[in-house]
Length: 158
Image 1 (cartoon, helix red, strand yellow):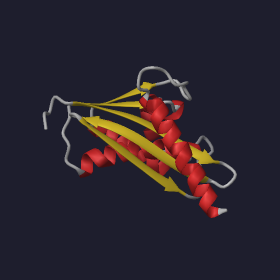
Image 2 (cartoon, helix red, strand yellow; image 1 turned 120 degrees about the horizontal axis):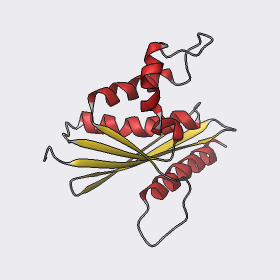
Image 3 (cartoon, helix red, strand yellow; image 1 turned 90 degrees about the vertical axis):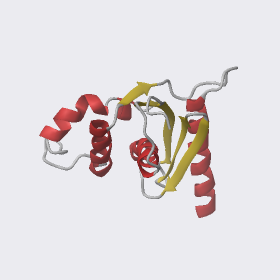
Image 4 (cartoon, rainbow, N blue to C red; image 1 turned 180 degrees about the vertical axis):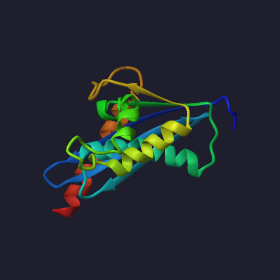
């Protein structure tokens, strides 16, 4: 693999708040390959699924020893897109709130920060829930996939 290769990934997470069932999906472009990742989870939240989608991409890259010069993460999650801006504050506060409680999803936030500090990553905020257009919209693809996975999982549980 070419080390100058830039990996692009689109990520999204979804959650049925009533049943706390969620799913995440990601589509990655590595060289000329298109790789789709996804997973469903119980007892979860939307933010947790958004974080897990991004971590799923990084885990795949790490576990498959893929080398790249940069990873572009396209996400509609404000929470994920801005985590890098809060990195120093999160570390200084030891991943705790002002009341001294652990922040939500601190386990995943710590993993994400590890990757941010060890990989060349750019988070690109995209508009959520876009309408179908003539050009391929990968954010729309992962949004639809993650919501479909949630609906299917919920239907099986009922």
